[in-house]
Length: 308
Image 1 (cartoon, helix red, strand yellow):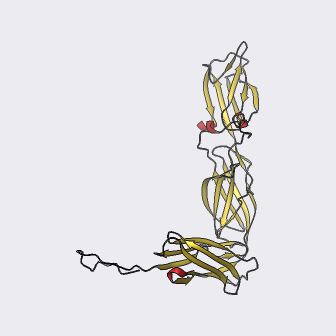
Image 2 (cartoon, helix red, strand yellow):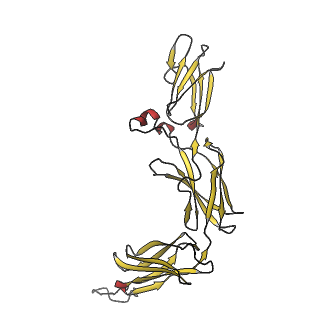
Image 3 (cartoon, one colour):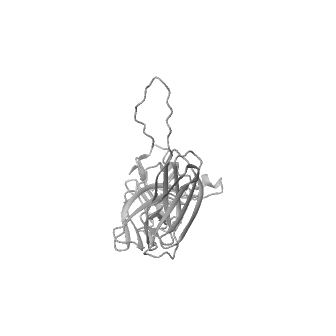
């Protein structure tokens, strides 16, 4: 960079020439995994938006990773190269950078080739979860040393593939395996979950909150197609009547379109577990009358899972 130290008079204009620079060209991962991808980053200064950039990736043993011809924006360029499946494990990869319009060129650091990573048997310890359940997430991993860092990301599944990230949990590979625990919580309002009846207007059906996880190791992501399976959120309801008449029965109309029927106990109490979360209706029938319990005065308590 040009010397910007103040050394001139301030009562007149001065022109200073600022030279463009290639600050660095570096890999964003520590190893080039066979058959995987290796991300890289190029940082410049004062080259101008839209400056042409040429990047060529190769290995010390002569493997070609490819060429990129593009433009740089905001003095930064991020990309990736495919690493050949047959790369020698004693090889190393690097890339060359040229900005022809600025007269700049340079070369990246070198990272060693490494075996391909394989992740299998991704799974949850259960298929369903209630609030405060502690679940185990696990997967078998090959091609990595013990102690290798990994990142596990849990997503809420969306049918339109706009999955919401819930949490990122750092992990380490030990004995060719990833295993960690996660306490399930649902902090949203279950009344905002669309019911089956509401969704039928749009040709869709009820879908409870479901979750899957993705594992990232050395820049590679595994499980994006829900290989872990989907963990389903199940809720519960407790209701107690204030004025028990006797022989009260009830019908629950649940958000997925199903129904449950039953009878209050001697203390006017019921509990329903493993119900689909969302808005529901309950109809209570006594000896001589029928009423919607949530609208009447005969309820001492109505508790749902979100009030746990």
